[in-house]
Image (cartoon, rainbow, N blue to C red):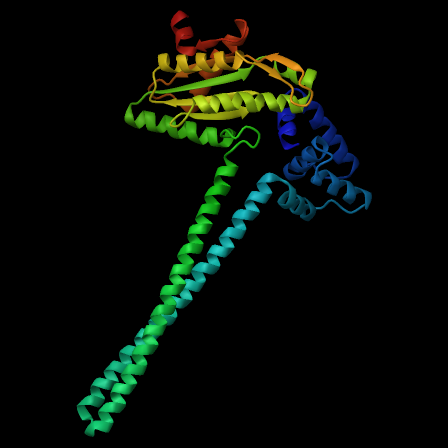
Length: 351
């Protein structure tokens, strides 16, 4: 459902949905704050979802839709809310582990200090001791203090080992949360947030090292018409297929991302425009070579084609400028008949 909503929000249908959201919020006397608007977009966009059912319950019960209500719904039902809650829970566990280790270390320090005092007292006592009985008592006291210190040291060692394992587990979980937050749920490619960060980093590295960097933007041809004919579920099937081909042919250090809706992007660090052009041609050719079928009915869907545009980064060029030139090349491919690859640099030279 979330993937269908995301596709809707990336197309012309988003304006109609936004108008319905505002009207529904006004009818329910809900203030159009950014958080409320986001919640109601999900509510009206996916009315059969758990969030939709909960809001229907709230409205049917005439419960007030307060800021606290919005925060609770966001934490429970919105993806970013659940992710933040998971990270917050992991942080609380980490705080407990660090506090436990701190207590163990503090206790060990006190034990060591007490043992030091015992040794000092024993040294003084030995100097003034008379007879075997006095020495035996001193040795017995030292032996008892040593055993106590050993027990405290073993306790601290065991606590540190346990905490090390727990912290490693939390680190792995947080890394998984981070990957989830940076991954498009439908295609398993990098999402827009991850793409923006990767492109900024790639531009900075290329600038610092005077290296090559090329950005490609790709778009599925006539995807809206395809969606309207066969439905969003079949459209999602097509998106996953295109993403699988793209991901297979854009292995690291390349970065393939779902840019939004039916649009994708690939970052090519350290590769020449000629190499990039060959890869994009191969991707377009492989995707267009297969006649797809609808899984639910086995209806033949025909071939899917891509249009692509790419731009080679110029010295000093920003990420936004590079993206703009790649987009311009993409639209040139669209205007030239689709199912083709266009170079922004070749366009500049021709101009």
